[in-house]
Structure formats: C-alpha cells, structure tokens
Amino acid sequence: MKATVKTAIILAIFAITMYSCKKDKDTTIRVTGITIYPTEDISLEVGKTITLTATVSPADAENKNIIWFSMGDNATVNALTGEVKCEKAGMSITIIAKATDGSETMASKIIKTIEPPESDD
Image (cartoon, rainbow, N blue to C red; front, side, top):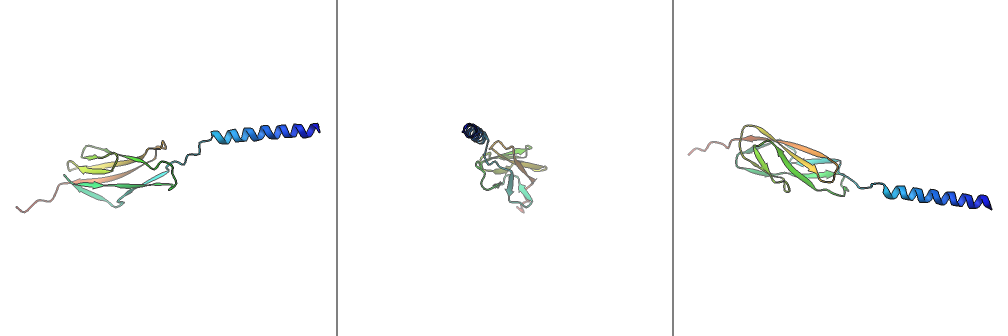
C-alpha cells in the first residue's frame, strides 16, 4: 500500500510539473515570411503613387499586421497602407514591410524611380 501512495504522489507531482511547463511555454504563432505585391519589377514616375500589399505566412499567424518604411529619400511611404509616392528620380528606393508581432520578419521591394515622359506641347 505504501508503494502505491508513493507512486500516486510522484505521478501527481510529475503531472503538475508538466502542466506548469506547458502553461508557461509561448505558443504564439509568429510571422515567418512576408510576400510583397506586385511581385514584378516596378518603375515609378516622379509624382505618381503605387500601393503595395503584402501577405504573411503562415496563414494562421496570430498578428498579421505589418508596417511599411523606405530606405532613401526618393519616395515617401505610408507606414500603414503601403502607399508609395515617388518624390524624385534617379535612384532606386527600397521599400520594407516588417511584421509587428515581434518576430523581426521583413521583406523588401526595390522600386526604380524615373522622370515622367516628356510631353509634346
């Protein structure tokens, strides 16, 4: 009988310990990849805008929000909508989409900035 009680106590302690370990484990599904659309090469004329979109993977990530920003001063980008406006031509700009879930996952898109075509006026 004593062995059965000891075994029951040991099993109970083991079960409580296992439950506690599982309870503290972070089970948040985080973003592991971002795809920016359109996926093809982009040239953007001065004064024109384009709105980029993105999808995140995995599809069941708990926080799918991203923030947009640019590297370089040839364009402005709306951090929430992904709308990019070309401010000046001559250099490419890099637009970055970054997950806001703490995963540090990012993707980038290079956009060539160009002068608008000459008018025949």
